[in-house]
Image (cartoon, rainbow, N blue to C red):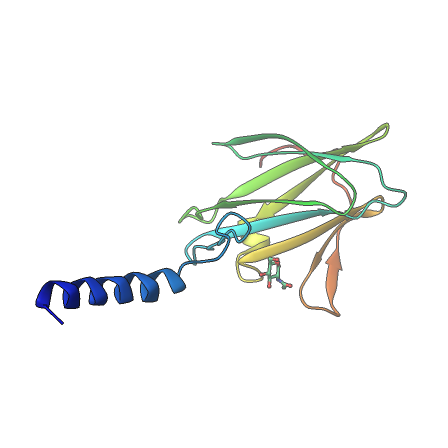
Length: 148
Ligand SMILES: *[C@@H]1O[C@H](CO)[C@@H](O)[C@H](O)[C@H]1NC(C)=O
């Protein structure tokens, strides 16, 4: 075998080996990285009888816009914490003819409790689950001031 056909063979082998490591269907397998320096809030629509939940969250600096969550769907957002401990996101939750308000992230309440804060929204109010068997539920804060 001449050296040029040897190079061709090695090149072909290299291509075969390299392509075998490529994901088969990169579009169908989105890789979701989560950044350890950010805090994540996940909101799940667990309303009874399946209405769409419209969530609108904001902080002093960001307005995250309205999100429509079909039954059993979730939406998430993430943020870096304020070093003075004042990070606060408030949301309204709308379905059918109801509108409720709740501060979904309050740094002084949640900072030591969750980096991934998973909330289920049902008619009774928001609950954050801490593990498969433990969750903490809150009342709506419809009358509360937005920030204080
Ligand atoms: C919250 O949800 C995220 C994303 O699904 C998951 O990685 C995390 O473990 C959950 N946290 C708890 C306490 O179940």
